[in-house]
Length: 138
Image (cartoon, rainbow, N blue to C red):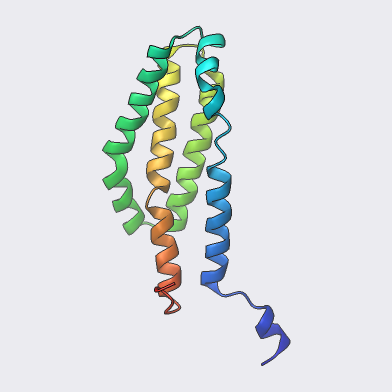
């Protein structure tokens, strides 16, 4: 075995590392502790408005979970994962720019689109990567 063979990282190992880093970055939800005060202080909205945004977010997740899974099956999973990440980032940017209820609700829905695209796609990509090397039991 050559030294270069030891240094070569398998496709599955690379994807496992990248998916782990993606999960860590996407789950650093620093917005969660400050979102209610943000709604109140920045937009002048109450807790009921925050809950309306959360309801729109949850409804978006429920409605798009299966279609996003289908998209992940027919399109390359990597692209669906990237699209979901981009949509979630755009949603948070829109939330920062929101100046009222409907912009906040729309931004929550965009975040929901992103999370629905990521949800399941990351697991399927991990499984496919391990399966391609006969390591699906890991």
